[in-house]
Length: 93
Length: 96
Image (cartoon, rainbow over all chains, first blue to last red; front, side, top):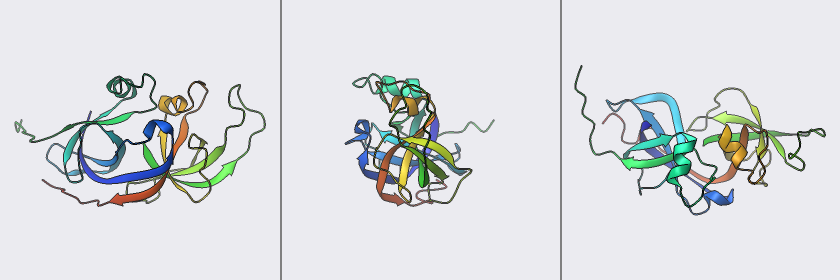
């Protein structure tokens, strides 16, 4: 899974039918301290109602993502926003 | 999914079984703020309507093949949709 920050959205009218009506978020990967990983990003389907500016947890693996979309057994999806992160605590080890 | 720019089309008259009629596009991968990122690749068009110049989203690996379900064909990149609106603020909330 990826820790990320929602930095934007993508809207498409013409797209694969699977993505009709699904919110797509541009999520930049961040390190646990909140700093951005250079240029690493993913466009993920939102399952939790996340918005721009929020820190989120992204599942970035196809099989898990498909299981999360259980209504669509073979959905062509790899990246899914599965959680909104309230707080990250580093033990400082 | 990632963002890409369609920079050309490709025609192959001899293709693997199941790929008949599929449009092939040459796509340049982009960063989240639409800068070029890496080398172009060939992708099939699962949106069916993308053409040169279009800003698109694409999916790679197995998910690209699943975009063409129920066919299961040897495809490793496929265009998912054409981007109408791309809102992006790179520094949004950074450094928290």
